[in-house]
Length: 289
Ligand code: PAF
Image (cartoon, rainbow, N blue to C red):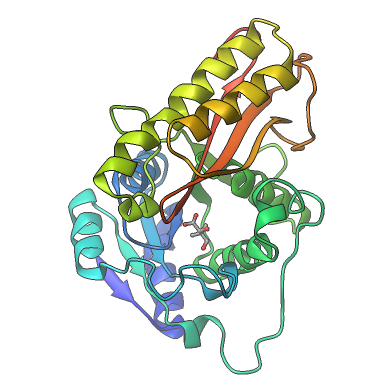
């Protein structure tokens, strides 16, 4: 696996990887890789001839109050994991390479970024959309893979890719990969490292409560009452705040008061110890995942 940190070198390496009509998949990450990321790399290998992974802890998606300075950066361990998984290229730009002096452009996906995590983290999704647009232009992938755990991010990036003609509406270049979970249901996340052993045990209540709520909604119980019970259950389990616990249209992220045939998603963000955890599950009358 080649590790590249300069844009000039990247362009050459990408041309070589794509030569002879080979397809290239990109897995964008911020590092601190866990089995969820590895599932993305494996899926990428199954779907494309070549696989590039980017690791860049993107300052533009952190607010001043967030954990940019302390975000885990175990680069040697990450590199070993990617090597073992058979990635072809690691794109490891510096902040200076990504945002050189004078950098002035922001990509903003209006509307979809105003709700859920966007309401609690203003500017976060501008940072995500901007860096992902740049990564797409830098790596020029045929396909890019993202975890469904960050459902709002996935929705926003799909919209961005369509709006900027980066993707064909009938052959989406963005692929969402189902969330990888610990045996007790906790969604894998680099931020789970912030949990103490006790908080880690308590955190499993989040997905348990969400699955129960999704089943009740699918059984046509009133959505508002179910969501109120869900929040109470999560707080009782040891979380100290719930930013949101909403039922939303899976594509438009519109609030849904009832399940009505549209594809629906139950999404929660809640705080425990130093971690803000997010999770989401599908809700419809036929399937719960
Ligand atoms: O999901 C992430 O790890 C990041 O938001 C991403 C997509 C790599 C952009 O920095």
